[in-house]
Each structure stands twice: as C-alpha cells, then as structure tokens.
Image (cartoon, rainbow over all chains, first blue to last red; front, top):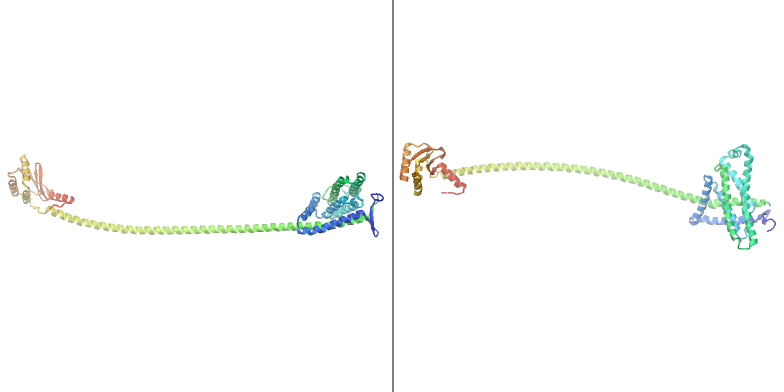
Length: 221
Length: 246
C-alpha cells in the first residue's frame, strides 16, 4: 500500500478516468450478480427450489419495508431492496482474497448516501406534491427551518459515515491482527466481519426506509 | 483524507446499474410469478365457486324434481286410493245386491218349499186321518145295541167271568152312550147282558157326547170300552207307536 490507507487505491486509468480498487471490486460484484441473476432468471420461469428461495428473499424484503412504511412496498422495493443486497455483497467482499470491501472507502457510502438523500426528496415530492413537501420544513414552526435543513444534511452524513467507519475500521482491525498474529488468528474476525457487514447493511437500509417513510408521510421521525 | 470524485461518480452509476439489474432480473420476474400464481389461485377459486354454484343449482333442481316426483307420487297414490275405494264400494254394493237377490230367492224357495211341505203334510195328515178313521171305525157298528152285542161276542169267557166277579162285589154296571137310549133298546141290552153274564146285572144308563159313537161299560173296578173315541185313541196310539194291528 502506498500513502494513506484511506486514500483511493487507484489501479489503472481509462482515459482521464482513474479506476480505483473499490470500483473494480464493485464491477466484479456486479458481474457475478448479473451472471447469477441471468442464470436464476431462467430457473425462476420454470419454477423450482431456487425460484422459491428468490421469492422468499423478495417477499421478505417487501414485508420488511411494508412493516416500516405501513403501505404498499412495491414503489420502494427496487431502491431499498437493492440497497440491502448491494451493501451486503459489498461488505462480504472482505472475505474474498485480494478484495477490499468497497464500502470501506468513503466514496461508496457517499454515493449511496447521496442516492438516498435524493430519493427521499423524490419520493416525498411524488407522494405529497412539491408545495406540500416543502412545507414540512416549516413544521412545527418556520423558525425551525434551518434546523430542519441541517438535520436533513447531518442524517445523510451520519448514514455515510456510519457505514464507512464500521467497514473501514473492521478492515484496519483485520490488517493489524494479521500483522501482529499471523495467518490463522484473523479467521474469527473475518466471521465477525460477515456479521457486521450484514448488520450494517440492515441498519443502512432501515434508516433509508425510515427517511423515505417520513418524506412520504408514512412515518413520524 | 481525500475524496476521489471519479470513484464517487462511478459508484453512483454502479449502484444505479445494480438497481436496474435487480429490478429487471429479480423483482419483476418474482412479482410476475407471484401475480401469475395469485391469478391462477383466483381463477381456481372462481372455478371452484362456479362449480359450487353449479352444484347448488343442480342440487336445487334435483330437489325440485324430487319434490315434484313426491307430489306426483302422492297424487297417484291418492288417485289409486280413491279408485280402490270406489271399486271396493262398487264391489261391496254388487255383493250386497247379489246377496240380497240370493236371499230373496232363497227365501221365496224356502217359502215355496214350506208351502209345499205344509200342503204335503196336510195331505198326509188328511190321509192319516182317513186311515185312522177307517181303522177305528172299520167293523164298528154305530148302533149301541149291535155294538154291545158285537163286543160281548168278541170278549172271551175269562173276560166275562172277570166282569161277573166284579159285579158280584156289588156295584152298578153303567152303560155310557152318546145319546139317550129308548126303553126298548135298554131292555134288549139288559137281555143281552144277562145272556152273556148268566145273571141280570144292576144296570144304569148315562150319556157322554165325547164318546162320538158306540158305548162304554163301566164296572165298579174296570171299563169295557167299545166307543168310537176309545177306538180312535187306540188307533192313534198304535200309529204313534208305528204299529199296525189288523
């Protein structure tokens, strides 16, 4: 590793675009996901155990979203379900040799937080209309407008930092343990990493759901 | 710490691609699968409902037909019952009429037979009476004197001796006749009795219309009956006994 471990790990350049290790890992994940889905897609049509497993996955996600929002989860499922699946896969990349979880670098959580931030407004405006949506920044008192805006920004920032901090720190812990104790000792930490990765994906998705729910008026924050 | 904006942009795009991938190849097919299954479930439920409705209709129809059939059966039964009743009454009336006719016929036959029997009986009785009279009166003289003489002649000596002994005890020999006898006849009777008994008895004379004819000699301890009534009684007794004496 060169320089700060927090700085982007640029592998190569395509024209003016530098390709970092996080982007490369994400592409690998996407390729595997795409191949797996393409294979499953055929099987889903013919039914069978895999189709049932995928159905259970999708309906579980939809049920979780519905539990939080209290309304039809179908408009929100593509974004929120994808958030969960993507973050889980990205976090679990830690267990692959030679790969580092993309979420351990600030850019990926930032991108996800940005998308959530924009989606909140998108869903809010779509559900309530622009005027009605903007009015909730003046609630319960117009003087609270700066605070409302600030909380909007800080919660997005916290969403980003929470995911990034957990994954980055975990990466560091493993790196330090490997440095100090050799090869076999980090295995429990890797297993712990799996758990942390799933929990962080769940937390991120639930918070995004709550934010969207608040925007569409389904959840009180 | 620095942010690589290129990486941020690429990761944003990457995530959007992932969203598209999952929507296209996971959420939509699964949703379609679920919808198809729900649709088929609904169709099956509707089909089942339709079949149940059909079954209900059929059952109602069947019950209606059954009720109709029952009604018909009841009507038929009632008709049959009525017909049977009518026929029975008819038969009964016929039988009664027949019996009545038969009874009338039998009664008329019985009447006829009875009449005939009564007529026969009368004839027979007439014949019997004639026989009886003939038997009683044959050889019996109407004249009391002749009758006495014939009676005395008919009696044997022992009979006469018994009469004599009877009279010897002291008593009257009473001569009973239908009509009052003349003195001449009385004298001749006394003569005839004296001849037969060997002595002149103490005689008395009486009348009794019941004797019908002939005479009766009454002794103190016996009777010699030569009257028509006596003969008739004897003949009737003989007839009742079924015996014929010449």
